[in-house]
Amino acid sequence: MTNKIAQLRKERRISQAELADGVDVTRQTIISLESGRYNASLLLAHKIAKYFGLTIEEVFLFEEEGL
Image 1 (cartoon, one colour):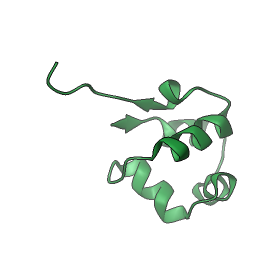
Image 2 (cartoon, rainbow, N blue to C red):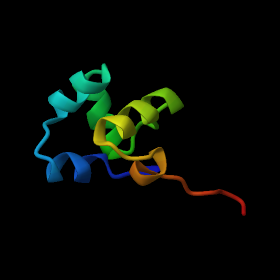
Image 3 (cartoon, rainbow, N blue to C red):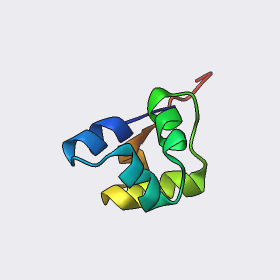
Image 4 (cartoon, rainbow, N blue to C red):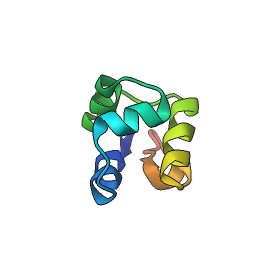
């Protein structure tokens, strides 16, 4: 799963720390999400999408496997 978190953050001039505080996670979690080393839980994906005023599908890009 890929995401647009870094792009959205940069467009809005939001630091990783500010986003982390806004969705109640550590900055390291944001770094891991942006680098693709970690996939967000549904709850975290919802919080991040809500933070940016977008839908989950607008922030996270799901690749369907085996179809």
